[in-house]
Image (cartoon, rainbow, N blue to C red; front, side):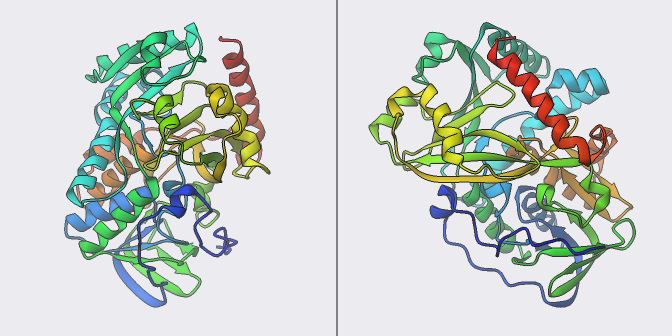
Length: 434
């Protein structure tokens, strides 16, 4: 297969607040020469790290390849919000795939949340974990949607959600733009890059091997006995796990057309001190319920981390600050003119159905991808499920593998214009409260 162009730009972390405040981490060596491995994992983000830890805990010998640095991609750039569920709601899953599948998904999705917390405790990972997640609504229609979501999750045994009217919401978010919201006390937020770095250290403490700056340029025979080639080395694994998601690129054409990259952007203000605490008194993370949403929270040092925007196809906007600052000022007018110290972008991967994809190519190559903007929890869960399948327990893997994937109409060529048209429609609905 043709070599993929270098997407890493030299492999250095982007100029994000997360990179500037990252915990110390060693530089791992590149893969060189001809090597063998029991399990090879491609991708040093949450999916790959989650699978790696689970397999190492079960006694397997695992080598992880990362094309840049650990957490370089979406896992080290995202909003850092632990949001339960998947992008596709349980009602949509039930309508498309039946009550049994929806019941199963409703049972397991919160396991990703619990898994993250378990590993933070077990491996003493320092990542600024804070409790609480709030969904905000702009209109009465949005509030009805949140009430329906609360009832739906209760049907599946989860009663963590509390509806907040306008006055109750103001106890958490000091803004006049919202009609109300919903609080999920089992949600949380954290420093995403430090979580990834801590998980990498945990994996190595279990005997695992990591090679950074080892970009995969070709994978031979992924449906049979796979061979992984990097720029300076070869790895011949018994089992291969592909966890590159939006950054896997063209090396596995069978997977490329199943997803589409899209970028999202984040800015970090100067430290706000008492101003920040007044705006978010309970220090929970927030996201609104619109299709193209805003999301924000306070960092450990009191900055407002504010994200939003979507660019389909995975390109970066020319001016991230200009794109996000007006939205920030609409929500918090008192921050007009606030200094923005950091601005960055990064790619996620979206599937047409908004459901993550998990499966196999042949009997030796596993993959997970397409978290569609809900990757912090979903990637940890899917990584663990794949690892359990490699270890011989396919009970959860088989259910997710059987969920059919839906191609983008017209293939990858038309995925971007199709998605842009869809986003215009949903933006219209959001604007007029439909």
